[in-house]
Image 1 (tube, helix red, strand yellow):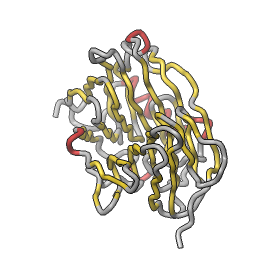
Image 2 (tube, helix red, strand yellow):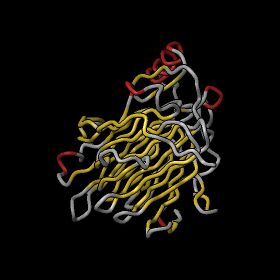
Image 3 (tube, rainbow, N blue to C red):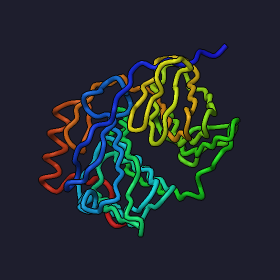
Image 4 (cartoon, helix red, strand yellow):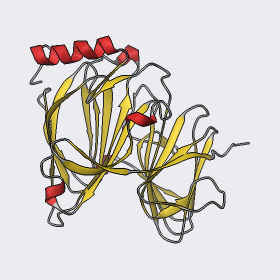
Length: 288
């Protein structure tokens, strides 16, 4: 018999600035470690004022992590030290594995509506994979399957499996589940998650219940951290509910984190920043 996960904690995302001055909401970050291991940070950006986001995220390094960007509205133009350039738009995902080191930029662009809206998640890499070759996966909207679920809901499967359908992002060491869930009023989603895995939901729009109890519904801009069990449950309230559902295998390793670089020890951080200053940070061939 399945054990439905209860709610362990609820956080309200907090306004902050990142990059060259981009206004966004941070659902969690450094202070929540290690509660959300292997996940490090979740940012929610949403504005119809270009002054809030047009400065973007100019060239900066990453090492030891993966960054996952999901666009809901608007566009982000990117470039990197591998020689990749491109644009991700509504419904697209970019899953970047920084590994041994990459330098990139992300510059938001707005459509006629001026809205720039999306989510960026950081996932840690284990010690054995910190220095793996970096890679990019730009996943177009049409490559992400949408699965109808009971009650009229719909789930976009970026990573993991729903109803026998696998998401396009595979071969990720933390065995992640990454779903974007939309439920009409009163509909319920039940989905298996391996016991012992970290799991959370972030409410983008609407409000809903996330553990089947009569507690007050969780509203938009709030993060639900699940306790242990082997199934998660979410029910939309009196309006449509849209949320991000994520799980992954914990690493249970020490974390040394400063800015865009996450390693296991302070000494490894010092090496990374020294290499960046000396111009020896990149371990991969550039321009290819």
